[in-house]
Image (cartoon, rainbow, N blue to C red; front, side):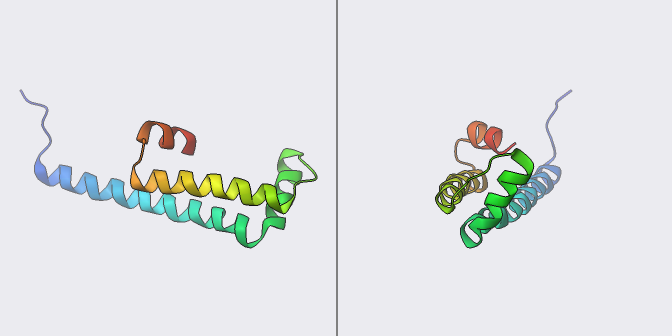
Length: 88
C-alpha cells in the first residue's frame, strides 16, 4: 500500500497553499505599509496595546523595514523554517 498523493490532488494542494500564502502576504503587507505611511498610528498602537509610550517615527520605520524583510522572505519561501516561525 503506497501513501502517494495523486497528481491532481497534489496540484490542487499546491495552488491552495500558494493562494493562502499570497492572502497572508497581502494582509501583512498592508500592516507593514501602514508603518511607513502613518507612523503615528504605530506609536498609538504600541502605547495602547503594549504600554510602550514615547515611540518615535524612527522606531516605526525600523520595525516596518524589519517586517517588510520578513514579509518578503515569507512570500518568496526564503528560509522557510525561520521566516514561517517568525511570522507565526
